[in-house]
Image 1 (cartoon, rainbow, N blue to C red):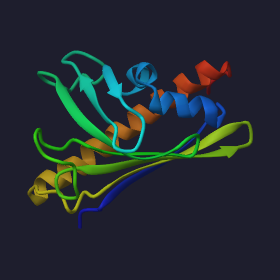
Image 2: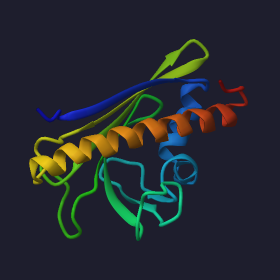
Image 3: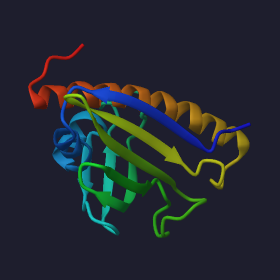
Length: 160
């Protein structure tokens, strides 16, 4: 059975205010996630995440652009957006996934819980959904490790 969501949790050696900037400000997003980022961080705001061939993710062939629309913004607590929906369509269940970053203080750091949901509703074959879960699960593992190191560096705390 294909899961409907991917969930990851990580504790980051940086306060929530720093992690918030890292996950919401385009110049920071482009330092840990995509090669280029644009985002209007308000409900209904739109953006683009761009991966270039030979960039941060070596397996991207020919480049890739994911459109996003911000769903919820609760500074230093919750940032949620729908992404990867077809050009010319409104994001909705079935043509996009919902990504949520939840932040909670933990000691001197931040517990970040990432959830990407809506996978079973995607208008894709079962094999495509299975490959999606594997690819995005591995991708989030990689990117969240990079995010944690980057945020700790910004906060001026040693990593690992």
